[in-house]
Image (cartoon, rainbow, N blue to C red; front, top):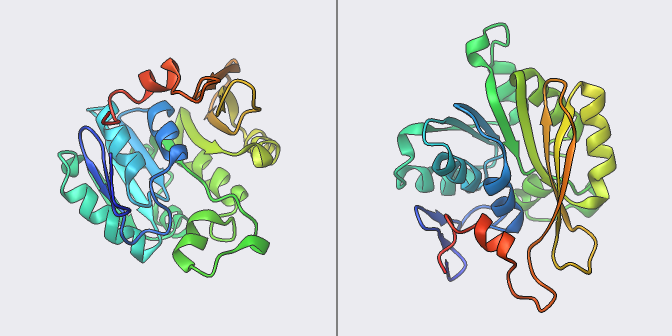
Amino acid sequence: MLNGNDLFEYKQFSIQQAHAGMKVGTDCDLLGAMAEGGRKILDIGTGTGILSMMLAQRFPEARITAVEIDDNAVMDAKVNFSSSKFAERICLVHTSFQDYLKSVDLSDDDNLYDCIVCNPPYFDKSMESKDRSRTRARHTSSLPFSVLIEGAFSLLKPNGVFSVCIPPEVLSDFTSLCIIEGFWPQYVYKVKSIPEKAPKRYVLVHNKGRVERQEFTFCMRNSDKSRSDWYKNLMKEFHIE
């Protein structure tokens, strides 16, 4: 439930978002509810921390590392994590993904992850905002797809999974880069706003191992714009009605 613009309340936690460039949105809700999990999770570009919180709720045994470069987003994430019942299981790291990757000893298997999640920036440089925090959250100049995908692959254990939510206009490029890197597409979730429309979002799960590709199509709303049973069931453990 949204209280003004700065606080978004879920059933088991709250998201304070007064400072972050990107607020709580449907992409994060979908990815947080659909991403694959594990005992050790990395959240790249955590923003307000919404993905880390949703995954902490879904996977009670998980330990989560949340990486964020933006000072403003870190202010919100720090408050959100510390005030939640998941605080002891989430570690916030204030740095860029590129610098975080450099800091990890990849030769030690204990440093690798079971799963990685990211709601990646996908706008190109020509569309950058004057708001620096918003630009970092939305534009590939801060984290190019190639850097994100290569880094995610190197940080995952064998058969680890990499889950993202992206729009259709970058689907081909993103998927191609994943395959080139060595990922296998495991799940492709096509999410429509209503049945009559083309998919508006894709939740993708790539595996660091050979797997069979499976595709599913879902609708968030019915033709009359009411929430679909699928979406209500997906979010029933999170959204306050």
